[in-house]
Length: 60
Image 1 (cartoon, rainbow, N blue to C red):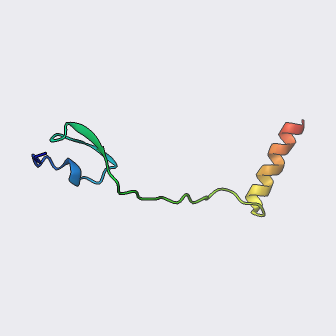
Image 2 (cartoon, rainbow, N blue to C red; image 1 turned 120 degrees about the vertical axis):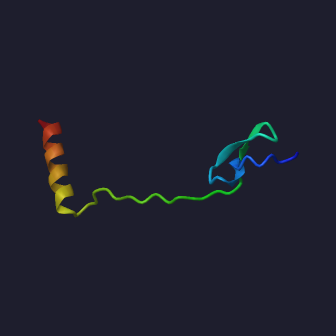
């Protein structure tokens, strides 16, 4: 395989098309992203008010 310097492999992408190989390449570098939960939590006043309202609507 002779590289034709298309610079596709130098872009920070998980997959790219290699013209020399004439195929898609999946990079081995895996960057793990941790999910951060930023929603309502029990004990927060706004959460409790919203929960009570929604429960009232369901019961009625």
